[in-house]
Amino acid sequence: MSSKLIAPLSVATVVSVVGMTIAAIVGVTRNNGGTVVMESNNPSPQNIIINAAATDMATRGPPKATNPCDGAKIQLDNVQCAAAAINGQLNGQSGANVTKGYVGDLDVDVEPIDEPYYKRGLCPVNVHWHEGAEHLSVGEYDEMGTGPTGKEEAHRALAGEVREGFQCRYYDENEDMFTKPYMWKHCVGMKVGQTYEVHWPHSAAGACGTTNQYQTPFYDGVFCNLDMETLVTLTPQQIASAVGVQAQIFTIVNDESYYYPNLMRGMIVDGEKGSDIAYYTGSTTGTSRDNEKCSSYAPITWQVDRKCHKISASSFDQLCADMKSQRDDMSDDLYAHGSRELVADEWAADNGKLL
Image 1 (cartoon, rainbow, N blue to C red):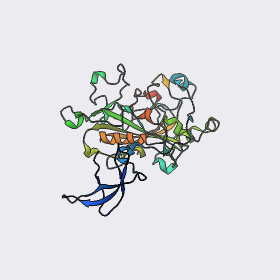
Image 2 (cartoon, helix red, strand yellow):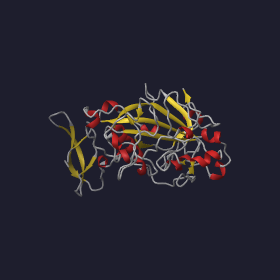
Image 3 (tube, rainbow, N blue to C red):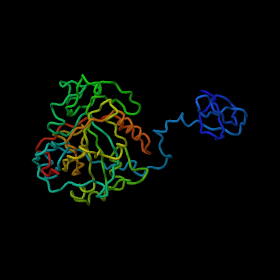
Image 4 (cartoon, rainbow, N blue to C red):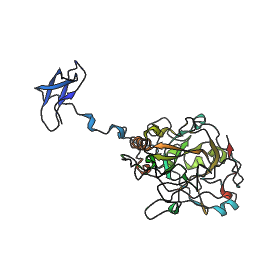
């Protein structure tokens, strides 16, 4: 480490050199290139400045404090889909087919939120993503999509890997943007060329507008200010109007022209992105559910972008850095989760809106 530090002209300060026990009062000079530098000339052990550049500011979180949402998750066990349907207790499931014109077969009496969540007092309480798309949008992310994983391996979990969902149709092994390696600093196990479905759970019962807004697991964020005693008094429509998820599907490319900052805040709405949305009510997803075991966390609103979009690997890595800077530990969401198999027509709600 050099004992010379760059600084603005005519500024006097105190410099400490790592590994040395003295500090120095500095004088300002100018080198041949016109850069202002400081050189040590007067030891002073009382004045020591720490070089903050050695700290990873991008992932520094706020001061530790009690997390009021910790453990707030309300446990609702999965149910047998058929039995729940017979008893009239099954609400629509996710992820479903969101292709324009598609209507599920399950008759439901609730309506999804069909405007931006913030207008209903909901805020994002988490962000996470799934390997491949859990939803289906024919022509965008479907059975014909490809990625770095071969087609014969798609949609099934390999040893040590999560189940992969549908792929977008962008991948081209002959284009560098889909194959050029990216040096990941914050996300775990991510792949250039791969499709991911990003979820932003929202809740009216979250710690909205506070340092504790974002939580892992997302259930803690959703239920932060809601207990079981209150939950059981709510109607299905009240629940669907208070809890929702945004979903957007991306193919990761190693190309900075596709960079978007601040993915923490929710779905990208910019031009074609976020302009073609499917609205319906469904459930939580994940590989613990399928077309025999259904989620009891329902009905909740889903707002799903029907289009697939390219996004830079650096956008995701910045997202992971932002997640590391939250008060709650979000490390369990820094990697892709497995994708639930496509919900069968009989368990998909018939209330989809084409807005």
